[in-house]
Length: 326
Image (cartoon, rainbow, N blue to C red; front, side):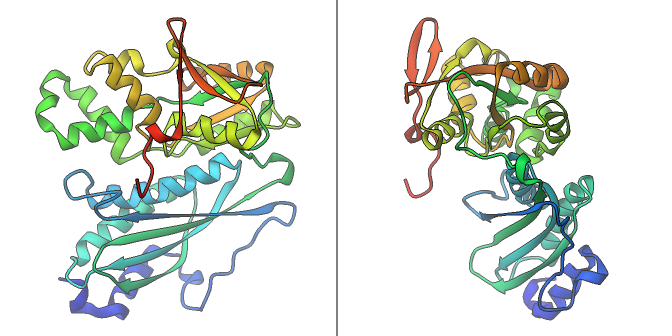
């Protein structure tokens, strides 16, 4: 069954089954926000052929990744999710089952964070496009921004970087999987198709840094890009220690060291958090998160961002990562 066979109203009826019954039907959703907190809103757009394809991304993964991108942005702001809306533009000959499977992927991740789909829109388009707007809330003094990093801050990263890009490489070039064991293949592909937004970091972060200013961003466009963005907005620089970067040693077992370093810095879509905070708080956070976090460098006054590798400084810039329209 195709979308054109059931029309707009038929499609909407199917999609409404993924939403709470008391929020759908009017011209807009009404959300209850804690009056002590501020509203945080973020939007991401995923386009077929740019962000996903049938080769690398099953429908459930398309939905999961669309939600993950937005929840990761909320986590990077220190906000907990309240609800999301979904804008969907699809060709008339797209399978209805494909759309339902995509919404199942969305619902699976949203259920982990007790977050509903509260509305949206559908329209016809020659290219499948998914636009998610997520609403979150955060106490004003706990909102995380990119512009408050100070010289002397340590740089903490959660999780592992380069995994998603390595997973994409396996999906695009299945022949290289012969040098990887089955568990490693599954782990890398999972990192690409079903990334986890790091909302779990917010509670321990609040517990140990109640009154401290925290600078942060998510690494959706790559670890290197994230650090450059923070430094540009904060008017500072950074020194990153190459041996401290998680995942390089593991990835370099199967790919070249140069390739592993490139993916860690510029691969993107790992949806981890990059946080700048005092050395004391940074160490406490790493202890709380264990292997899920590490200190990779520090913020400095000089405004360049460099990677220190065997006593050699390598400049990190936005030009080396993925940029739309390049």
